[in-house]
Structures are given as C-alpha cells and as structure tokens.
Length: 121
Ligand SMILES: [Cu+2]
View 1: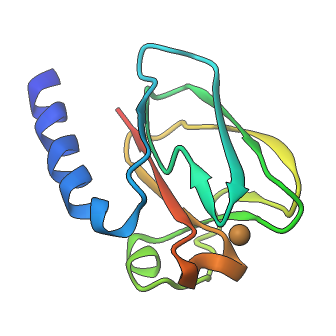
View 2 (view 1 turned 60 degrees about the vertical axis):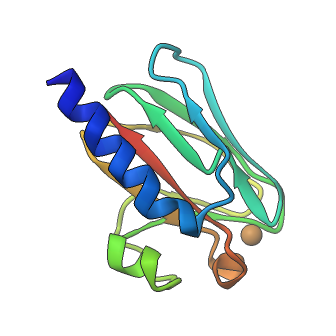
View 3 (view 1 turned 135 degrees about the vertical axis):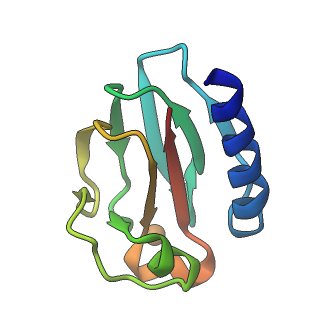
C-alpha cells in the first residue's frame, strides 16, 4: 500500500509540477508544518504530509489561501469549494483530516501562478 501511495504521489507531482514552482517538501515524518507567502507564491507549494497533521498558514497581508476544487485549480479560478479559507495576513491552523490532495489559491494572484497543493497520505 505504501509503494502504491508513493507511485500515485510521483504521478501527481509530475502532473502538477507544470503549475507550481516546485518547492516540494516532504514532511510526512514531521509534525510542525508552516506554509508562508514570502512573495507571489506559497512555500512550500507542494507539501506532503500525513493525515491528522496540523499545518500553520502564516500569510502576509496581501495574500489569502482559499481551498478550491481540482478543476478550479487547473483553470486558475478563485471560487472556494467551501474548504479551508485563510484570510489576508492571517495566521491560522488547518488540520488535514482527509486522505487526498488539497488544492488552494491566493485569489488576487492565482493568475500569476500563486497556488499550491497539500498531498495527504
Ligand atoms: Cu497572493
């Protein structure tokens, strides 16, 4: 099951790497995770974690982080899927409680490539 998971992740990363700046961080054996917005990008923009891990979003004043559907993500849309929503400049915790890929965007900057994913194993 673990090797199947890794294959799926490898395919996902290949597929999504065209959309990200490729700051991949695998924290699946860690438990203190922070996503920041130091510029017109999130870092890390591909985060691999375990189910139940807590992430701190620590955003600067001009950026938000709104969870969107995969389709919205691919099309650089901004419509929330009613998932997590971190406001401008907020520091907020998010617990990943589903084994899937979470897609999110910065609404004012998604067309400039400011979007990222969290892969939950
Ligand atoms: Cu932004």
